[in-house]
Length: 269
Image: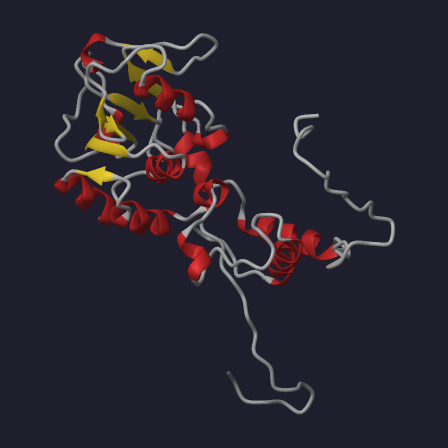
């Protein structure tokens, strides 16, 4: 806060700085307006519930779990009684060494009724795989699951097994969350990321390619330059020009009322 001037009323200037080297401070109003509009629609949650505070925050939906920050997922996974983690693996999580996608996938399985027992993250796993390539575990981008719902993976692979059910659930992950590797003794028709390997009889390996780090194709440099400083300013200016739609809090007079059937006899029709 600075000294007031005769031609300007006292005020507080609020700005945010996007991530990235050289990013300028920008006006957050267009972004906050968008968040406020989403809040009024309740599109990501049940109306009247707050997924971030209070009693409702302890039972987030699967969609909310996949949207959580890495920090929030670190706390949830480390304290989730439905996820069993070995000692130094928990330290890997709490020290921030494990990729967000790994954490979100473990929470995703637990929220789906599949309680994973984690046997390997980064700690305790070799830098190289048995085939001699660099393991995704070495960068915190993979997890080995030795049991689900207390049922060991060893001796329980094949059609209809707990391994089958777990992998089928993992295959529903899409976009950036889609694993690059799901390794067991099983492969699944129509998939490009499931592999059968003989040394995976006792666990399911789920891995992702690292998102960051130097690479031969320069992709890491590209990730640091997604938006240049001036482009941030142009983007926020353009967002400020877009008029937000009016979202009704109550149904309009044109809404069609849903009539509940007298019985559930034709519920599937």
